[in-house]
Amino acid sequence: MNGSHDTDGELTISEFGRRSSLSHKALRLYDVSGLLPPARVDPVNGYRQYSVGQLERARRISVLRQLDMPLTKIAEVLAGSDEEALIRLDRWWTAQEATTAARRATLEYLRDRLSRSGTPGLTPRPVQLRDVPETKIAAIRTDTDQQSLVGVIVSSTYEIRAHLIAAGATQTGESWVIFHGAVTPEAEATVEVCMPFTGLVDPSGSIAIRVEPAHREAYCRITMDECSFPRIMLAYDLVYDWIRAHGLPDSGPPREVYPPDCHLGPRDQPAVDIAVPILERNA
Image (cartoon, rainbow, N blue to C red; front, side):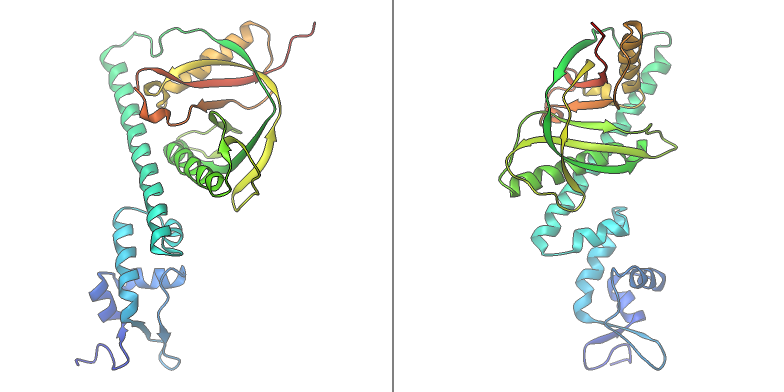
């Protein structure tokens, strides 16, 4: 022994940091956050002692930090069994990949606009009306900015779907994302990811159960490629301009309507609806 640990399998913070590839600063941060508290703190000198058994958790934290996973998400991923951690990790990574794809689409949109100055950013298409019946939904509300929006949508959709499956319920149609404020690259706003279902489901954690009122809405359909920011804003402009031109005041927040697994289909085919609830004309 060189004094770095004792016969009970305890490691000093220096030895533990060396074996886990974590700095003293990182270990102190993980202690304060509750992510990796030491096994024991000496009551006399305040020295932190870690157990050999904590090395695996420490190494997992180190790997997840290399993936730029936030500490709060790491705590969530590592809570529970390894099987549960694997599910949470896969959901998070799917959201990260979706965010990267959305950023790539934004870049391609800008490059296209720069190389073909003067061409329309969105080809003409009709705006239509439809009646939406009263619908029971499971929903998650969260605040997000534009950079994190796609990841939030993907992760919330997975969470709601898993909850419905666990409860024996069935998704009955398109999911949608309601925008209760303006989500921008500089500012967060509240979005609500909603999924209609049949069956008996209780609320759980961030998942609420509510009824979306019946309404009429104006909408246009865009492709998955056209969902990238800021190109998607042209579709919103199209719907709002049509509403104003027809004297139909909007009656609720706008929403994006996504068919199940629409991300698996051709990206250049119409798939997603940009919709705005409207008031009926007086007879």
